[in-house]
Length: 245
Image (cartoon, one colour):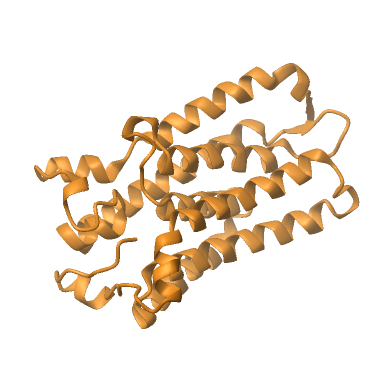
């Protein structure tokens, strides 16, 4: 393993943060709506995200939007892993790739939710975040892929059964976060006091805070019993749902 000195390479990580943020600012819902000669802000809930696109243009188009957003969140994390997988932080045995994959992903999520190109009013980050965890969890252990896909199916099943799209997605994000934190906790049990380990945990936590905070209006409506429902069956049949996820 090669050693990486963050003190000597900090400017690269600053440039990476800017690049990943700008990648996050690229909103596929806006592009898809424009391809249909529509303004995403003027359709449905106005949210530039998968659910709004699905309601307006059908489940297939919504699925394409989800896939593109998931890749946007996941591919930078994969790049972060591949670039730094043979490095440890100087003077430690902590893998830089464990830090970098979530560092890359966090700034993509920030760009998606708060894009400078859209006056800091973007999507809610669920697809991009789920894509981040898909790639971040499986890039090191490919046999995790069926488990992650099972988690995706659980999320879809939860939404189909309860018709609570936002809550199902948020529970999925939280579940994947707990899985990754538990794995890193075991891996670095003897050095949990390290700033690199703590920073990695904080970045995973920050991803959760961002996505939950982006859904604060949905959560408020849920608590007062006024949350709109998302019918996967109706969407599959081409009928509009009501959630504003």
